[in-house]
Image (tube, rainbow, N blue to C red; front, side, top):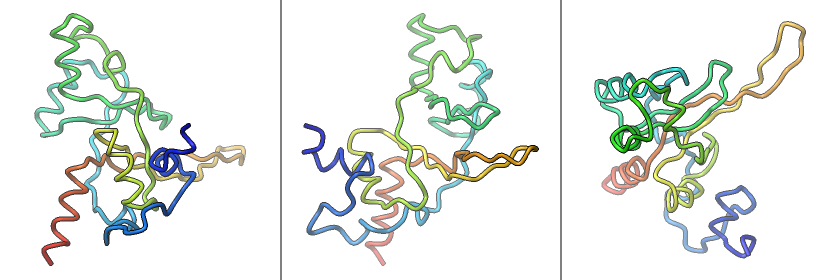
Length: 165
């Protein structure tokens, strides 16, 4: 029955325009949010170090990305602390033990309407940009670069600032 659910169809890229009376911001591109560059953690960072880094830098969450560029998931301050306090992880464990590996990705060229549909179910979306990368032998592949992390608060802030103008 997913194909009957317009929000699922939009979130998964099968449907574009579904709302007849879209808000003014619906078709604006995600890149207009002017997101700041994300803090990225490598998979070998310990839970202890991740907590320290997130607190020091004032972040609530950060993508965990392998050196190859593969996005492994998201680590959040609350989930890391909860996992350690519950005994499900140790401070010395790598953050890969406490990451969310179920996450949504959205591109810079996607609409804020699509983002809005994603954020109805998810706390955040990882903003990615695809780049063509070439090896020494001339073969190429597409690599996703993490461009930012966007939350409902980012969208709300953008909409409310523009509404006031």
